[in-house]
Image (cartoon, rainbow, N blue to C red; front, side, top):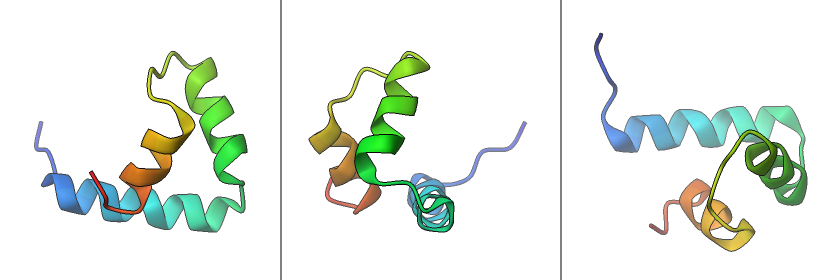
Length: 51
């Protein structure tokens, strides 16, 4: 299995988030429900390339 570089993964995830029309809070709630462990601020920072 081939993996994309981290910056490309982040770019694609951010593009999908934009197309989804979810608010950051809605995305975080879905992420958390699936077992995610980041807080809302950390998730938002990741999507915006700040981490």
